[in-house]
Amino acid sequence: MEWTDRIRPADLQQLIINWETQQQVKGTSKELDFMPPVKLFAPAGGMTWLISECDNDGLAFGLADLGFEAPEMGYISLPEILGVRIGHLFIEQDLYFKPAKTLTEYADEARQKGHIVA
Image (cartoon, rainbow, N blue to C red; front, side):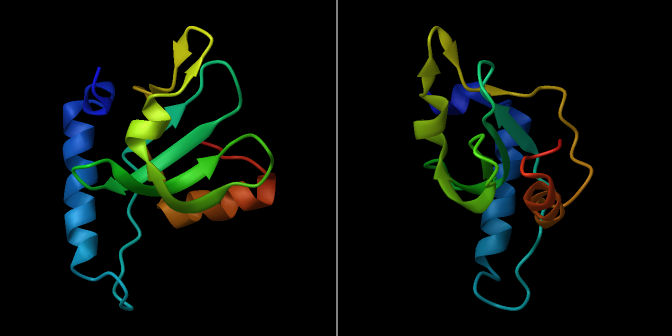
């Protein structure tokens, strides 16, 4: 199964649009702070990711919480994350997630609380 099959098509399209839009202003004072359209989680464990953008190969930018009370923003590989198995379970997309804040706002709150609240 391809990693692209594990994210809803409309959400994947939005991630790619966000990536392409960000590339036009990357490294300038005009960088954008998107609301993350995708939340990924480990059904058996405390891992959560909020993803705001990705390229066609799955290089993504987002907020990662691996359950160690130290959430971080940065680049991740969606093919790698979505390929992780914990027992018989895979990392999943939260189909009910509706972003209410920008990625930076989620990150600020997560750093204060020690985990992502979304």
